[in-house]
Length: 194
Image (tube, rainbow, N blue to C red; front, side, top):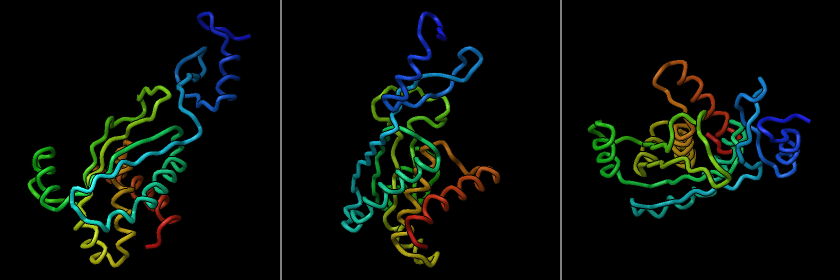
């Protein structure tokens, strides 16, 4: 029997296996063991808000759910995840970009993560809130045309890009950009044609 501070570690490990909890790391007898309460059964929730009043965006709900599920699989993120997607007009995203990022122009997608660095995130068994993704509905159409792929692919790309930002990825440095863009392709290419 392995004990630490009066706790039977082997019993806790068996309990975690039985209940489907993930074991995350922390120093424990020079081994990396910690019990975090994230379950293998993934419950995913995306809350949609259509501030752009564009009815065409509702068709992407199932795609976004599949992308979230695939991203969690590719990135080995177990647990119940939730996030919000807010569809906005170019004017609305321009205002958000100006007010919160000090960039005075519209953009295609903006993400606001609850926590930028997921590595030290402590979460109980409840659903893990990632944050908000604002998607410019006009950019979906404009960029699909500019890049020569479907509107569906562009909508899914913007969502995936925003999702990866919520999960702690960025593209400010060239090496980070390579990692993030490779992940976007790995997640999307299996689900949505170019």
